[in-house]
Structures are given as C-alpha cells and as structure tokens.
Length: 627
Image (cartoon, rainbow, N blue to C red; front, side):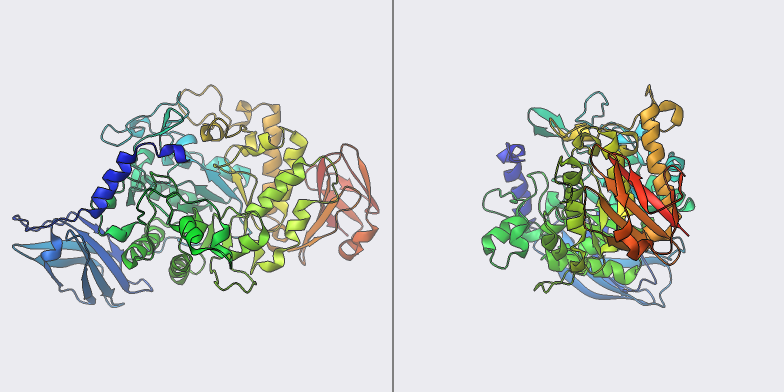
C-alpha cells in the first residue's frame, strides 16, 4: 500500500493544518459552527456527555446554562482556540427539550442544544449463534435512487459503473428494497460495510484513480453518506429490517479517519492524531501487540503507524479523542437502533481504549454484540483480542471476534489433496478452550478484503457445498459475503474491485436479475437453494445454534462431528475424497446411542439404518438422527 504515498505535499499540507493554531482576536460575533454529538437523550444510564463545540475563537467565551436537571460540570480548552469541550451531567429528572448554552464574549451567543426522549424501538439487540449474518457492500449491491449517485460539491464527484474503481451508485434504499430476498435465504442479520460519510478524494493506485466506495475513511461521524441516502434512509432501512425480524450490524472504525475529515481541517490539537517526523506506515504486524518480548518501537509502529497515507491514525490516548469516539458509538446505537458492532482493524487500536469503548456500549446495551477484525494466523494470538481464559497480562473484554483462524482452516482443508485425516478445521476447533465463549466468534468463508470463496476452491461446486455446510453447522455465528449464494467469483488480483462486483439485478439496466429464480441459471439456483435449505433449517433448529459440539478425530478420510441438545442431534459427516466411503458408525456410539435412523436434511432421504452410512465423494452429509 505504500504506493499511495507518492504525494508528500499532501502529508505536509495536512501536517500544517494540524500544527496551525488560530491566534488573535476575532472581531466578529461569536459563532457556533458545530456541536458534537449533534443531540443527546435524557434517561441514558450514563448521565454524562462531553460536547465538542467548534467556532471561531470560541475558547475566549464564558459558558453558562440554566436548565432543570442539567449541569455544566466543566469547560475545557485545548490548543486550538476554535474549540471548547463541555462536560455536562443530565439528571434522570431532566425533561426533553432545548438546553440553551450561553457563550459570552465580545458578543453573547446562545446555542440551543436538543435533549431528546428515548424511544422504545429495538436497539442493541445483539447477534448471537442463533443468527446468520449477510455482509453487504452498499455501493455494489443495489441502486434504488439514481439521483444520489454523485454530487458535484463532494471531493469525489464521480460515479461510473463501467469503471470498476469508481462509485457505482448502490444505496441503502436499494438494500431495503431487497429485504424479502434476505428473508427467503434464511438470513437473520445484515452487516453493511461502513455507511458513514466518506467525503474523500480519489486516490491513485497503480495509475488508476480509485473512489473510497468501501467506506472506511470517515469524514463526518454524524452523517450517513448522502450518496447512500443519508441519515433518513438509514433510519428507514433499520426500522424496515426490524419489522422483518432482521437485525443490523454496523461497521465501526476507531483506528483512523479519512484525510478529509472535517475535524482535521482545523484540528483541536497536534496530538489528535499520531504524529511522526516523517510519514510512518503501520507494519501490519500483529505480533508486537501481544509479544512479551516485543521492542516498544515495533509495537509503536504497529499501533501508531498510519494504515495508509489517506487514513490518518487517531490518538486514542488523547482523552478528548477517546470520548468523541465512544460517544459517537453510543449515539449511533441510540439514534439508528443498530443491534451489533463490527469493529474494523481492531488490533491496531489502543487496547485499553477498546476495552473502555466496549464497556460503555455493553453498560448501556447489555445485549449488544461486538466483534472485531484482528487478522491473525493462530489461535493464541486470536484469543488475545477477545475474552479468553489465558493468563495474558492484558485482559480484553471484547465479547466476540471474526474467526480468521477458522477461515484459514476452512480454505486449507478444502484445498488439500491428500492426508485428509489431518483436517485443519478439526485442529482449530480442538483449541476452543482458550476462548471465554467460542459461540460468540463470527465465522466466514470470505469477505470484501479477500479472494472470493468460490474462486479460492477452484470453482469446485462439491467443495463449495462442503464449506457452506461447515459454515452453517459448526459452532459460532455464520457470516456470508454478498453473492456467495449465487456463485459470485474472482480474485483480488488485479484489484479489490474484482471481488466487489455489482450484484446482478440490483442496478437499473441490468440484463440479469439474480435476485429471482428465473434470473439465475440452474447451478446458481442449486447454490442458492442449498444455502437457503441449510440456513432455514438452522434457523429452526436450536441444536445448530447453541447446541453442544462433539467432534471425532478424522479417520479413514472422513471428518465427523455432532451438534446436539436435549431435543435434537445432528450428525455432519464429510468425505473430501473422490470416492464414496462406507462409514462404519460404531465408534460414534457416544452420540448415536438410542438412534436407529436419520433424515438427510438436504435431500429429505430417510436412512433406515445407522450401522453403516454411505458418504458420497466430495460430500458433507447433514443427518438429523431419529429414534
């Protein structure tokens, strides 16, 4: 990614903004340009809120308020006199209304700050192992409103579906219009790549100009990107999703912001960001974060280095930065009603800050689920970034995490051509004792940053079905990347855009509509129906949601495990070889005792005897045992 940093003048100019502090007397009336959070609520469990106030030379003001139940505890100045930070306590007895903050300087200015009543709509419901998450890249999924595809006054004013690197015009209303599709597939939760405003300029990569359509460079925390429909469209989407019993996962970014973030054009202080004498990129190495022998310099580069030059690294050790991020998280859940929180680049954050942020969300919304992205390659390292049973000197409180280690095992197992008794999936799951609750880990086969699953396994349809079977029947929370159910494919080389293609049928003028059975070809329908059958079965089968898991040592080229509870026992038997296998079941008596037959969940075929089970070549059987 270092090829992004070809314009040192951009970094120098940005640094000038950070170090420039307004001085002198402003000979005009006090002006409040911005207050964040944009509004707040009475009745929150934590009665305190810190308001960021921005306006020309506002630090010269004296601040007061008079409102029953609301107290101004502290007024803080920072390096930049254009900012004040107001610590406010809101009593449980306070009523909703407009709190008038009076700023007295050369002239008096009053700012009416709104305190809202909390509504009773669902929020912070969480996702759990009962759910099936579907990951959507909004710009590439469906376009319901072509009028918001581009705006001439934004830093990137283009949209062009013929260019894989630019915005294509997908929006939140487009996702809302397809809620029935998710419901049919058996999805219970929708995870959208970030929807917050990304008013970012295009960047040059390999000679091609690229848009920030992926959403990971926030430029205004309190606005959903208007090219996606803005705050109103997001509110409508979540309420419509909840009406269909679909939960919503928001993609959060704490580690960095976009280079065009409004705060960075006149930063509150030099240490709002991690500053370096010369541009320093993160090493992308996770080991120094948890290595007991790590050099502090290596750890600093991992944590404080910038992810890329156009995504400046936030200094979460600055208490004002920390409060700003935490309060935005609470504001988002309360205002929009999101149910769970996926955290981007989790391991690159200050971990003490992450614990504080996680706890603030959990204190306010005890059922919310939080799962981060920590791209590691072994179980012990993954356990460090989630609640665990290991005696690490730092104790993480994050409830869940994306299971990158199991993802690697899925792919390795599906691509090995021999030695099937050394099944990596078995080996990874055998180490689950390190986690406080492995059911809270989120499993996946691919995502927006990876080669597409179907391509990784060589477009082998039998292997495709095995992987989906594992995903939907093993422990944890399954997550599916959009289009996997219709065999969307491709590799990241030559670009990420290849694995982020438009969903066929989601855009005006599309010649094919893969949202419908008539628009899919025979194999695409077989894939869709395979996912649908398993997902719907899982949705109605608690044993596959939070039942116990028992797995047996892979032997004779087969991997067998059971999910079970008091009501049902499900047997999953995988034969990855090119020949049918006759599976003798006597060694599984611990789980099969008392059962005499089984129903094949995928075909409805009834097996009248369990003594020997024929497992076809390259197949994973899902059998509901019966007495």
